[in-house]
Length: 230
Ligand SMILES: O=c1[nH]cc([C@@H]2O[C@H](COP(=O)(O)O)[C@@H](O)[C@H]2O)c(=O)[nH]1
Ligand SMILES: [Mg+2]
Image (cartoon, protein in one colour):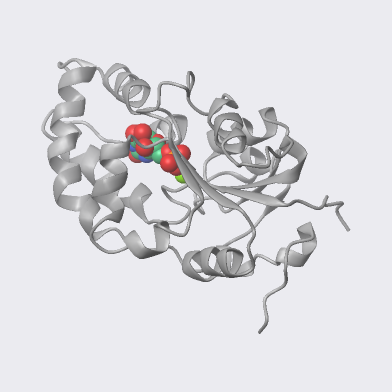
């Protein structure tokens, strides 16, 4: 059996992990690049999942040789986000896990590469009460203290430092869906539970501490966290 260490604090990614917003990004980006006769392939998406918004825009514009600037691309996608994000849905198991940790007084935080404005589009309409259970939130694309996006460790180190009892990296468990997010967590010295998109090749999941098909499969006991009651 693999060796898992006990943790005391938990950090959650958001897009594609707690919310189905990765699917919504795919629709939004495809709608925009279709105007230029291009395809937003999963290979390109894989490169930018978890990246800061501006970096993502640059990669797409360059990879697809779009005849617009990264700023123009961001403006066009923002129009799509405003329509699509408010109806984002929770991923299976997300509510149970967040409510369980909150009820059992496990400190939990959100560490998303989203900008704060995008976060509000995704959460405010349907999920505000649940997301209010986090002790704190860090928004990688709009928080100046997060210098570099995932796969760099910055966001997880900034988020961990916001807990009042200042946990060490090895006391923190990260939940992630993206390859870049797993790399970021490992670079921060943290264990990471990966729930990847099923299209992600197995060879790209090897850095994760444990890989699950769904958050519903997570067993808190493996990491010394309070067990589910049922
Ligand atoms: O198809 C896409 N997926 C993901 C992103 C980027 O990845 C971030 C999601 O990262 P996280 O899962 O760390 O919240 C988004 O905020 C966005 O910046 C993107 O641009 N396009
Ligand atoms: Mg994600």
